[in-house]
Structures are given as structure tokens and as C-alpha cells.
Length: 84
Image 1: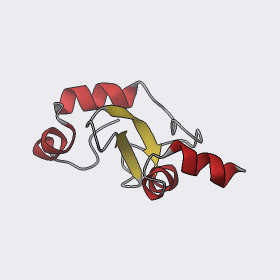
Image 2: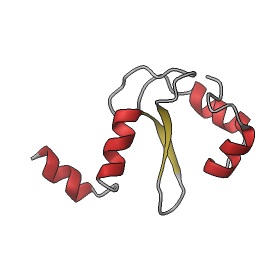
Image 3: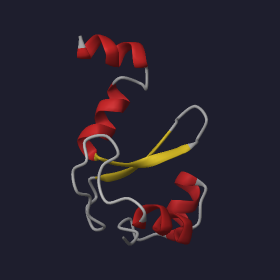
Image 4: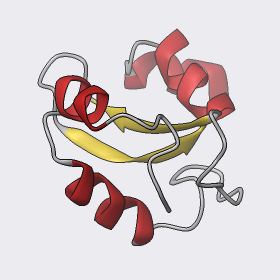
């Protein structure tokens, strides 16, 4: 995978890692960490998920899963209620 955002500065400011670290992380993952859909290096609908409180990086997600987590604000109790 390559950086589809096309900007080393963006990666550094958004995620706090180098472009090389970003590419290595991307290369180690072929699908969305939640639903498994194939991710594309050139798809702007592919997102590097991170904890908004701590900044800790998680994994790459498809746009739908990323929006889903965002809508639930990473609150597991909300996700569990939605499942029920």
C-alpha cells in the first residue's frame, strides 16, 4: 500500500508516525480490521483508526466501519445496545 493521502506531512501531523511506518502498517493488513472487506491503497474510503482520547493507533478500517465507530464514540455499551 502507498499513502493515498499523498502527503508525508499529513501522516505525521494526523497520526504522529512517518510515511514509512504508515506504509509498513498498511502493508501488514489486507482488509478492514472489523468487517474484513478488501482495502485499496488508492481508496480515500480507507482510514487508519485511532483512539481520539489517547491518540493510540489501531488498524485500518473501511469507511463504513470507521463511521460506525465514530457515531458510537467508541462507547462499547452503545455498541452492545445496538447489537441487542
